[in-house]
Length: 306
Ligand code: PSU
Image 1 (cartoon, helix red, strand yellow):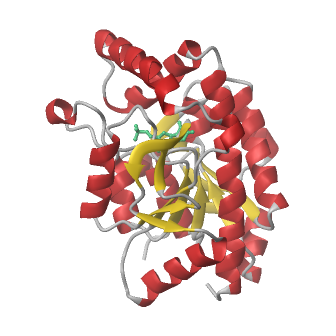
Image 2 (cartoon, helix red, strand yellow):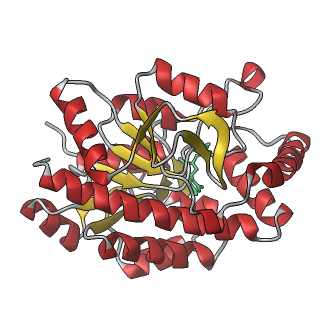
C-alpha cells in the first residue's frame, strides 16, 4: 500500500491523537486571493480566531511535494511572497507531489488533504462555483464536485458574487450537497449578506450543524456539507452597491482574455481596485467570521462523538 507524503504539525498531530477539535484552513487565499502583507496577517488572524473558539488550526499547503497540515510561522511568511507557488486543485495535486513542487491548496485540494489527515471541518472565504458564461466556457470550479465526494464540512460566506449563483446552487443540488445557511433564510454572496436567492436549508446553531453531519454519516451518504455563513452586517457591501463593480471586473477579464484558474485571482484583484480596498476589508472580516463558526462546529462535533 502506498502512503500519502503527509506531515502533520506537532500541535495538529497531538490534537488528532487526543480527539481534540481541529479546523483545516486553505492557502490559496494567501497566495492568490489577497495582496501582501494582508494575506499573511489575515492567515494569522484566522488561526487565532480558531484557537479563541476552542479548536486547533491546521493551515494546509504543499511544500516541496509534501502535504503540510499545519504550517509553522516561517512557512506562512514564505508563502506570503513566494513567486513559484502553484494554485492546486484535485487535478494538480498528484503532479505537485510527484514533481516536488510548492503549491497552495484551493477549497477542493484542502478538502482532500484535510480528509487524509482525519479533519472534518474547514473554513474558507468563498467557494468556487459555476462561472458566468458557462454556456460557452464550461468553467465550473472543481470545488463543487469535491463537495459532492469528500466528507469535509466547508464553512464559507456563500459563493463569490462574481459567479453565476443560481447555477452554482443548482449544480450543488444535483450533486447532492446539503447547502445550509447559518442563521438566515437567504443564500449569502460573499461580500453581501443576501444574494437575492433563498437558502436551500437553514440551521441556527453549531450543534444543529454537527447533528446534520452526524445524520449524513449515519445514512452512509458520501460527500461534504456546505455551510454558508453571511458576512457580519457591519462589514458587508450590499449587493446593489457591489453589482456594478462586478460587471466592470468581469468586462475587464473578458477583454484581457483571462481563463481557467486565472479567472478568480484576476477578478479578486480587480475588485480590490474597483472598491478602493473595501472588498479586501470585507474579505478579511468574512474569513475570520467563518473560522470562528468552523471552530465552534468542530467543538460541537467532538461533543457529539465525531
Ligand atoms: N476564498 C477567498 N479567497 C480566495 C478563495 C476563497 O476569500 O481566493 C479561493 C479558494 O481557494 C477557492 C478558489 O477554492 O478561490 C476558487 O478558485 P476557482 O474559481 O479557480 O476554482
